[in-house]
Amino acid sequence: MGIVVHVASFAGYIIPFGSVLGPLIVWLMQRDEIQFVDECGRNCLNFKISMMIYVMISVVLMFVGIGFILVGFLAVFDIVVTIIAAMKASEGICYKYPMTIKFIKPRS
View 1: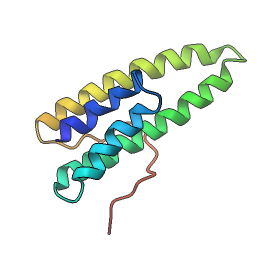
View 2 (view 1 turned 90 degrees about the vertical axis):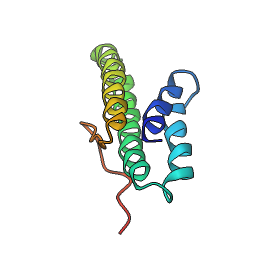
View 3 (view 1 turned 90 degrees about the horizontal axis):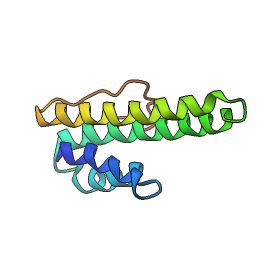
């Protein structure tokens, strides 16, 4: 199920906000039952929300010109890091995404 959390984020390339909604649905359904899914879900959601913020900033920077390059870089970075996270989840390792702002913190 940890793999499903990460792979569900690719829904964002088909459905608006799917990169957050896909992992959110899987995480909410399984977080109380499986600790690994809870950790993977929090990491994935924090990363995807952070990426949305970075893309919004890049869109604003498109008026200056550099935003086009940043959006391309962010798209490739998102795909590569998500694939790495899914591969780590298949090995039972909870991947810590780089450039992540911690919005959803672990429960106490």
